[in-house]
Image 1 (spheres, rainbow, N blue to C red):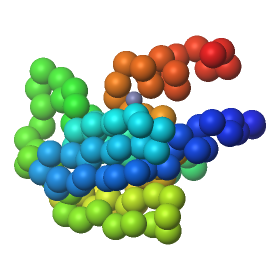
Image 2: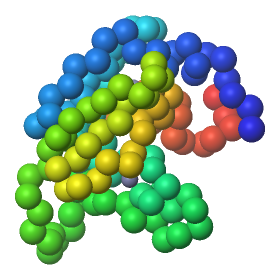
Image 3: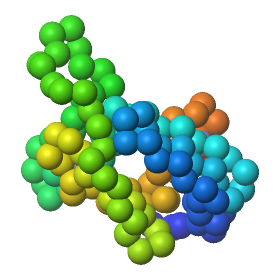
Length: 127
Ligand SMILES: [Zn+2]
Ligand SMILES: [Zn+2]
């Protein structure tokens, strides 16, 4: 797998604003701005359990789109956010989940804005 140089330098945050009840905002070195809601971040948890990386069934949460008959859940919150080296943050959720290490590279790729959706999440392999 090839890593592109421009995504490496782009995925360094200049400033991170964390609100445990609303979400995370990141200003990137390249001037881009990302705004992640709690539900979005929880649903995009990159851990092996949520993504099924170990060959198990993905246990992805569905906070952003709970469907017509959502099971009762207390409001999603982050209990704490901890830096992992200089490349990632680990989020402790109030639903007990804490195994997701969100690398800045991952966060940049899941930036919910339309520009990044087009750049990182549609037609892989094309520019
Ligand atoms: Zn997870
Ligand atoms: Zn973006």
